[in-house]
Image 1: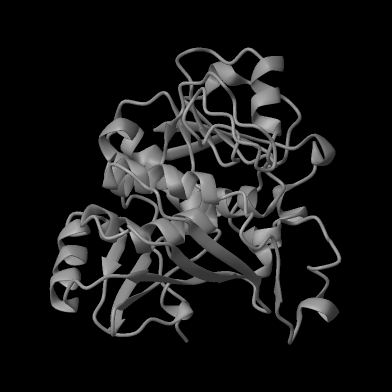
Image 2: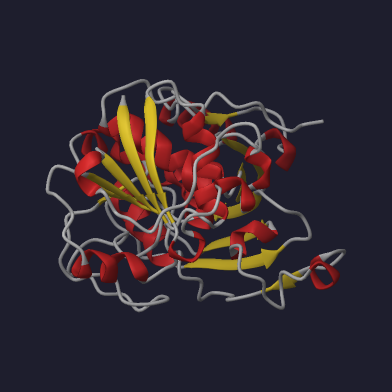
Length: 333
């Protein structure tokens, strides 16, 4: 059994991670750390787990008893935690924050600078599976970044991204985290829609890095406009790429790119969000109008956009079936 510790276990990602790992055939959760909830039952916070576990939160950090630790911290806390605590070298780390997502020595001031020196591998299995398999430390991609990259990477592999790309994506309220805020309050969010961080979202640098990795270069701008949606979970994105390449060839390229992917699928029909909610799937579809390639992609922001992908990365790191613990039914009805 893979012995797991979870830090920051009281938030949305912590709760979803516990839910997944309680049902993982090859995992034992050793501890779920939360300083503010220490001693309290996990079900006091994650009420959907009633009947599934009698585990309690702890403020202890028994690193010597685990094989892997998941960091479910807010952005900027992971790097600080590693500087303040000695984690045994044999313990693997999967970080869900953005602290180590960008390549080392490339400091980009997004929500905070990325660490200048680190050994974290960017955990997008569709392009980095072999690196993840031998990694000791993995930086889990951002939710918007995952959805948008999976829409654009096959186009990059065909060298199609040579002009500015228009991206629009809408996310559910869980993307803002569990801490209440003015834009997550029900009476504000319900029946409402708004834009935030237009063209300046913190996930743009990691999107650019992955596209550059696959295409070999990237001069084009990624013009990303994020939207807050009036639903709980999921991300639905559109990406517009200008190209003269025939649609049939593009679709063939997309299907070839994802032919071995365990959770990312090209489908021939238009997408809707409920096809992926509550799953670790990413779905992608293409249409073409004149010289405009319209790519649609969608994921569940808490699963493929966060802890589902983190569990997928754990499975790869420990050499087990990528789908273990992740065979989830979508909430399509």
